[in-house]
Length: 399
Ligand code: EZ4
Ligand code: CO
Image (cartoon, rainbow, N blue to C red; front, side, top):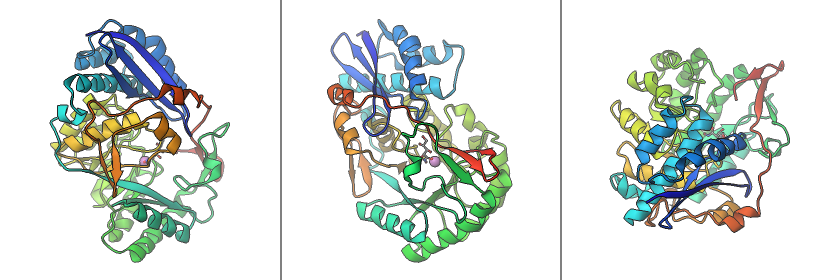
């Protein structure tokens, strides 16, 4: 079997998605997600100009060799652009292998370790009443766990709180404002109010989106202990992995980190010193199913669980790959699931299902996702940026 073509399709049914389609001489094709939010075309160029020409003529069954060839062979290794491109190749080749085997991908990963995949959804509001309404809406949709984000008094735009100004389609980056002291004062009261309203059983999560120093994160973790969070996410940028030692020493609030990581090396200290409880990388930004499976096995040695990043900017192709992994690995924790627009569902018809808050990859051979290129062509690329974040004196802050 030989690869005869590797094509990149960009489509924007509500937001931009980058998809790699690999075709073989036997007519079996595979799909991979290479979407890097706000930097999509950099990955398109990396794939189209530097990776696709290397694939033509090679054996699609040699997934591991192809991965190592693209990772080590390029010399310039790691980084989000490279790893999103390699991820798309890895996932497309797994899709092909599973289709040839006539099995859903999870069967090739060891088979199902559970019946279904637990998710969490997002609830946000500028104030408590809005947040409560959002939590009720997620509960009505069946979500068994909920991430809560709110506005902070005195700040106009805050991460994760829905607002027209935060549209991914804005011409330049939207600007959020930030005041760590105000946030640290406000958040414990929000968590207390949500606990009082919704009771002790509902698993609650919160994303600090890389905005705190280790000592600030330690204090927040301690302050939130009475409200029994499922996790506190991205409490620091964690580029300085050793910084998490301080956080860990001071709080038992569970910690989840890793959505911007793209290599196991980004986790080495965090995992071996057991400084976190959940690894948060996506299939799409971590180089694919092959390395993410390896990360989960590494994390399992330290009783750390999986929690694959699943925002709207992971395409249904990347989401399907995640759900197959989630079903198969023993140390599954939880899957973030934001869902997609109807238009996105029409461009990417898929076998995976979301029922009563739980996902299942379905039983189609391969990933179980198609790309309707005719439908995709109706949504051309639209320039879009993620927001940036500034302190109230104008200093750029981590977003
Ligand atoms: O900001 O996916 O946990 N989820 C998140 C996301 C990220 C976006 C960046 O592209 O933090 O909303
Ligand atoms: Co996050």
